[in-house]
View 1 (tube, rainbow, N blue to C red):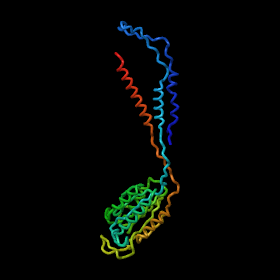
View 2: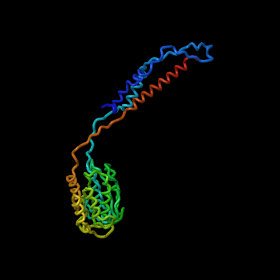
View 3: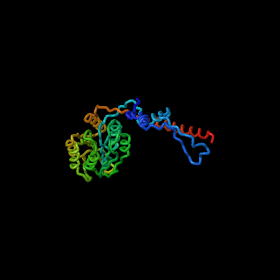
View 4: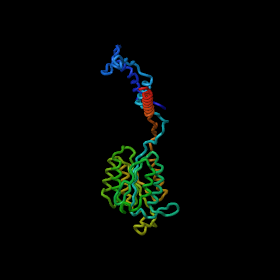
Length: 328
């Protein structure tokens, strides 16, 4: 579809004609040109006739092209359905030393907790079409690995590159929750969600979990907490020989955070349980059904402008050639 962004500019088309009509009429008497010293050439008897008060077809064409360019002609493509606003989801993943414990069955073998979380969480991220996701990693403290974005591939890449001990071996749940709240501070009030995955209890950080919980509640942010770890005591950890299972998990704290913010607490003891939790999150926080449309548009003002410039250049070139051909 073709249209002009400012069609009212075409009201300027008669402007040159109005200027000619308002201009005082030139005298009909011949205007003689007297140049001292040139009388012998009989130039003193020559006269200059007043120019016609008309615009040539060429001049009208140039003016039409310039006005058309100023009106900004635009081509509108077919409407495109955009993903709805979706949700803003901040993922907070524990990288403490206990996440190396190999007590999670995955693809027929026992793997460490972080490997299992990466595998299942990657599938969860890929299905978040229309949502904006961010990634926070925490250990001794918390840091923002990926700000909120719809670039899901980048979030997945940053998650897969995370390593145990990257931010220390302790567990700063309060810092992770506080940083999540801080990143949401400039966002809208609706659909702001934190998914916090940990296998332990708060043992480090600068912010107490209770204080971070108060901030989240004041900002209206829902926090869904997930306790990771099997009850199977066969686990093996790189940082502590022998498995501790889920004995170090502070479920009371995680339940309190979820309940006070309007979220829920889940316990992920295996891969199937974690997948079920993510499916449940889809039900709890559905995406709005309203769809937005977008019409790509391309500005075409440079076409009439370029044609006008070419015509002017051609006219100047022809005039110059004619002048060169005339005898001196």
